[in-house]
Length: 193
Image (cartoon, rainbow, N blue to C red; front, side, top):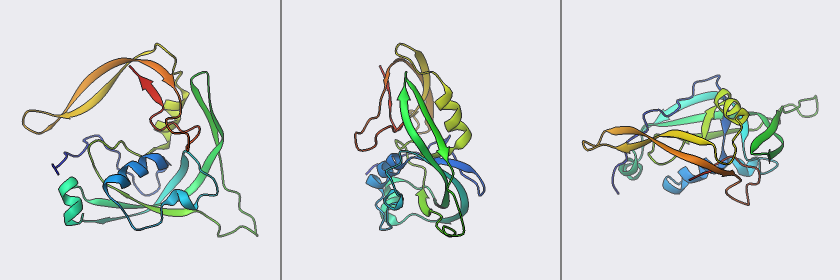
């Protein structure tokens, strides 16, 4: 397999960051880099399309020889603790609506925190599936409507193999969940033509 250049603008979480985790994006990465660990979303009480988390630990490891053929990136192993999940997520008038509910603790539920680990690596073609909470909140406040003209940067390999960003334009066609098994998910939900 051809080596893929790493994304230049990939988010690099730090301990203490408040982040949003997209299970669907993690699934895309797992198609390239399989892991034996239990998938985090399988330990969630419900199939949440997004989860608010805090980064509580980071360690690093080198990729295996097989992984190195796809991406030379060092693997950041993030430990995340769930700090909120979406309350009745829905898309209304092309705008995403969901408040995050905080886990409640009581003397009976102490220690029932949901903590999980995720391997992150730079890999071209796989969008960030963990993003800063403020970026998520800002983007969900935008009014995405049919016909809206947008311009987005897209990374391609230049003639010398170095990453080059080009701007591409299009119009919003609609906002909808891309997979029925993940209702109300924003992952790849914006259809642009």
